[in-house]
Amino acid sequence: FNNNFESAGTHQTTLDGTNLAGNANVQSTSAAALKDDSFKAYTLTLVYQDFLSNPAAQVVTPGFIYDTTTLPPVLTKPVAGPFNTIGVNLTLPENALAGSVKLIFQGGRDNETVTVTFNN
Image (cartoon, rainbow, N blue to C red; front, side):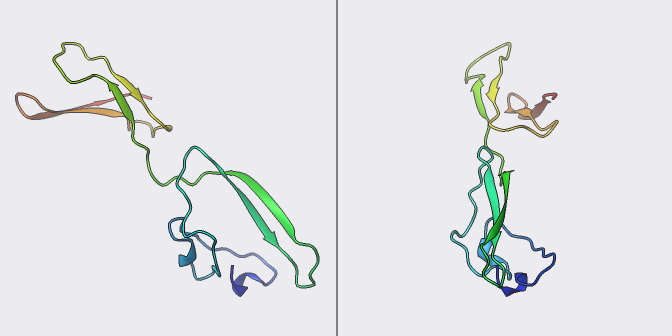
């Protein structure tokens, strides 16, 4: 952070994970952006050294997950072809928002759209 963060007291800012250097309070960064990964957590470490050059102090906060996209689901069943019952096998790579898991049928004889929403 730049010298706006060097005075004693509470400081706050908002970082855009897709553009870390885009914040006016950022002096430099070792990477342009964070990697979006809902499976691996970051550990945040805040370090500073006082103006008398005493040894640096830090606080460590584990478990920060930067997640900005929904990973695509995997549908392994039904497969293409004729059927009169529909077995559905799907895999969700991350937890879903309640009511958001849907199977949508489009087309058919009447070019219709039928949406099946699964419960939690």
